[in-house]
Length: 122
Ligand SMILES: [Ca+2]
Ligand SMILES: [Ca+2]
Image (cartoon, rainbow, N blue to C red; front, side, top):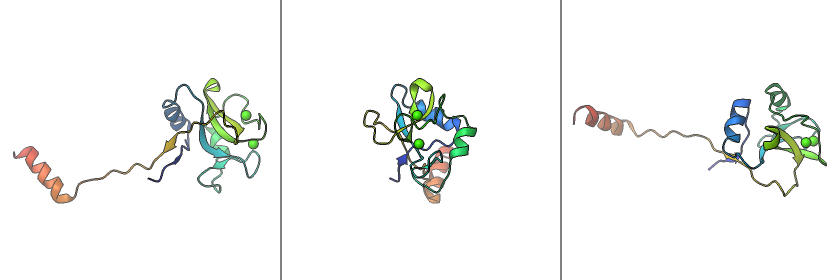
């Protein structure tokens, strides 16, 4: 189905995603595994989102701080109402939200004509 871990690209998207999961913390698709303090997309390590995350003020207070431990993955932290870096291998915080491409399927033209006609000329 082409889904991937959610990569909210601005504060509005982050708020919308967080509204889906109001009690638990959850992972999002950013990490600085390859280079400390350079955050990239999990789906595309060549896309640097470091500035975007800072400009949009999506981080929680005092984040990212590479703590606790070697914190190279990113989760939404409910208590901070923002993003926080955390150890990728942590198993205590395991939920994540996935996103899927939105595909709108229109019926073929003859079917649209038929439906239109039946609406106005029953
Ligand atoms: Ca880090
Ligand atoms: Ca942290």
